[in-house]
Image 1 (cartoon, helix red, strand yellow):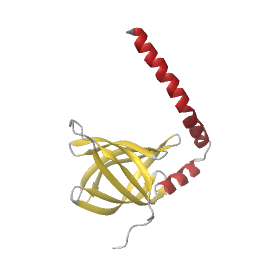
Image 2: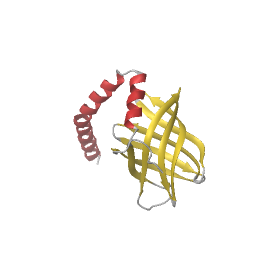
Image 3: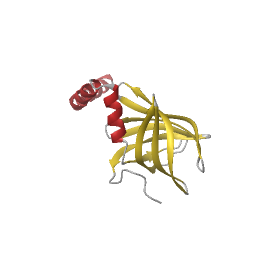
Image 4: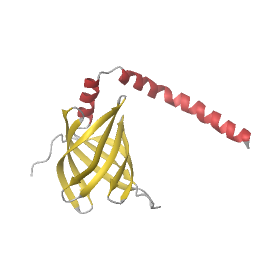
Amino acid sequence: MFRTISATLLASFVLFSIFDAPLSAQETDKSDASQEDLEKDFAEKMTGVTLVGYFTIDGQQKPPKEERYDIYKTTKIENNKWMIQARIKYGKNDLTVPIILNVDWAGDTPVMSLTDLTIPGLGTFTSRTMFYGDRYVGTWQHGKVGGHMYGRLERTEQKSEPEK
């Protein structure tokens, strides 16, 4: 049994090392960027984009549910405060709202953070969402219900909120 586990670990390490090489090069390139450049890239990446992914609900054995968030524009306000103009479809609600939240940085990786934010018509939410490359992952909480979310960023044609 020990040999099987050791062989599996060794194989995993070799595969990880081979496939990790290109990612390490990307990380090195980004780590040389200034904070201003990282923030500019983040604002551009998060403008005219749709987060396409899934969310889970803690304690449920059901498959993850699909989710989509259209982000029309992302702007830094000051310090770590940012404004996201997003379309949120949640249940029967479909709203386009400006959301003020924090974006903190773990090295070259942005982490969106909101705590007990009340969105009229939807409720109060807490979440932490990390972005890297064209993917996102995070946790969410809505009252006593919470879970995880993950997905990818897809570029959209429209870079501003649709006219009403």
